[in-house]
Length: 446
Image 1: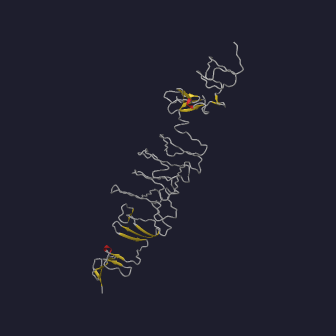
Image 2: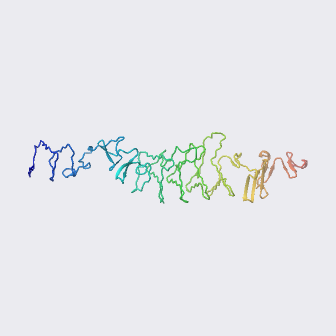
Image 3: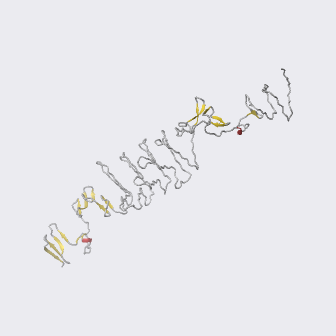
């Protein structure tokens, strides 16, 4: 078979018509380009060993260059019981649509497997996308997590594990956790940090709502609260409206030596009247008439040879210094039911001692078992300094007060140790009687 060879262009058909060449194989081996072609229609595949290009600058046909319509790619909508679980790209086609691997089960994710160079469906229990973070590494730079109007919740269902642990082994002057609020005033009901629970076991004492503990430092401040801008508000408030027999605040130590379990200090010099270092107030109607409540209760029951002091007060530095002021109510010492403004109960010793020199110079007042008042002094004398001494029934005698002081006024008689007595017997007479009540001497007004 011979060949027809023509060096010029060959034109077939007209500008409006077409020409069909019946051939099962086209083979154009000459270099160059086919130009002026409106469209190429093929009933089969169009194969090329190079890259399809378009435009005057031979741009590759891709989605990013815009020469392939994105609508030409169909995405698979997904379905149950379909798909594969591994591929080199992590992609698959289903129903002529493109999709991620559809063969994964619930909660599985795609993981790269280096040994097979494939993306496989796998569980997410220990790495990327895990239900529990194993670690969060150091970020490349300072960052922030910003929330505006949506509430974010971390929900842990663990029972014995720690839901969140923040650990630092190198911290010196920084903060392991810092909470800062600077934009606006927090309104009533708002809070920067809130710890709440409705599930702590009330039948035991093992549940802890907030646990702050430290075992690393022997000095310094373990828990610090600073309110630099607070003036008339409340620095810390504990409200327990459901508390019955428990404790709103419990502070305990079994190792305290010379320190203070609670230390309250006010060092400012601008304090006005009614400045209080500690203010305790109880109010409300008691449920029963027999109920006893305590505004403050102090007890020191240390055993051994030490000296126990339940309450120590001191006041100094002012023009008037009062160590203790009882504004209202009775004071009972060794009695829980005082019957007078000051009621001192002691059946074995003097109820009141007035001391000039500790242990050596003092006077005592005490009531004996018969209810009689006794006066004693370490100096063996009881002296009235220029005062009158009245012995009268009901505290009042007929005579008027003497013009001078240093008198003894007796309503009935003066009895001596041998039972002799001086007794008023008339309006103007005084008799001396012997021990048998016989008049041995009469004094009469002149």
